[in-house]
Each structure stands twice: as structure tokens, then as C-alpha cells.
Image 1 (spheres, rainbow, N blue to C red):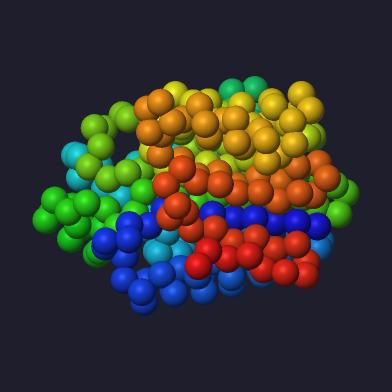
Image 2 (cartoon, helix red, strand yellow):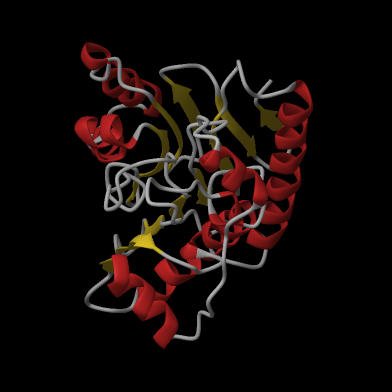
Length: 280
């Protein structure tokens, strides 16, 4: 069993050492809990569980740590993909739910599996997800003072279970102050993609990630015979002409764990049952 998670990027200029340590400790805790959970659950169930824990921690930009958009509202996006069935489901710009990843999970058996805006929110209400404000005082203060967010962020998880099955899940609270209606990469196959050969979750600037079709390219290249490292190398080289801002985590069908970022400040942690690898 293998698992890797990410908590977005952080800004070297605005993130204190205390916050960095807190994020590091949070990632370790969530990673341990999720690995233990996977001992009795599938990769698909585990990525949803791990991302829900990240959504529940205000240190990260998802769920209750979500950014406030230009009109003063919070809109979130999340998705998951089962590497075995290759089914993808997600919500885009959903409002007032505690865990968008759970709504994405609920959509997986439906024919219409990616919903946006009021349709996503209405679906959540119809399926028992109560109204929940994810706004925290810090985000409101940032918004009212027109400050930059403390990080470019998204959260995600890739899991490889004891049945050697892969799954991936990704969730974001946006970039903050964006034009209402802006679409994140997190609920697209550019930012969250898996098949039986590889699973990849992205964080960074959504427009750059979509332009590079990053997750899809990496998984496709691994499927076509590239090693995971070479698939990352080629795909990240293709971001350079426009200085694409992206970070990715992945696991392939052999259980190989890999991560890379174009601007080295991605917050990540992985565990293979023996050793932790946590950002320094």
C-alpha cells in the first residue's frame, strides 16, 4: 500500500515558520490516519477520506480553508477518479457544503457525474448535504483588506491499495478574489486523473494546469510506456514556455511514488508503510 497527499503551495514571503511546521504536522497526521484507513478500505474510499480530512483543516485551501471570491462568496470544486473503472465525478463552484469531495463521491454512480454552480449545490441539498458555511475569520479579513492569499492551493490524494488499485481525489477553495464563475482545474482531468496505470493530482495555477493538460498527459504517457519520472519530466518541460505554475503528486501501477513542482514550494507528504517523505 502506498499513499501521497498534497496541501497546495505556500508563499515563502507570507508563510511563517510556525505555519509551515503546523502544515507539516497536519500532513503527517492526515497521512497516518489515511494509511491506517486504507488497511480496511479501497484506494477510492481512501482518497475521499484523505481529502475530506484536508478539507476539514483550515490550514489548507479547501473546505473550511477556502478562499473568498471577488463577489464575497466562497465557491469550491472537487473531483475524484477511480483508476479501475476510469469513472470521473466532480463538482465545480459548489457553495455552502462542508466537504465538496463527499458530493463528488455521491455523483460517481450517476450518468451525469460533473455538476457546476447552482446545479451542484442543489444536488447536494437533495442528497442530504446540509447548508454549511466554510468561511473562517482569516479568509474574511484577507478579503476585506484585499490581501493576497497565503498560498496557491488545492489539496489532493493518490492511493494505491492492497489490491494494487489506484484512485485519486482533489479539492480546492479557489485562488481568492477571482471572477465569479471562474473554473478551477481541480474538477477537470487536467488536475485530477487516474487509470489502472497511474494516478495524478495537481495543485497550482489552474489556468496553467488546464493549458498543459498536466494530469492527463502524465497518466497517458505512463500508460504508453514512459517511466513515471520521464512522464513528469516531459510534461513539466512543456510548462516552461509560459512559466506554468504547477505541482503534481503521483503513484503508478508498480507502487512508485513521485512528485514534482515547477516552483519548489509544494506542500506534500507520502508514506509507503515504512518511510515518510514530507516537505522540508
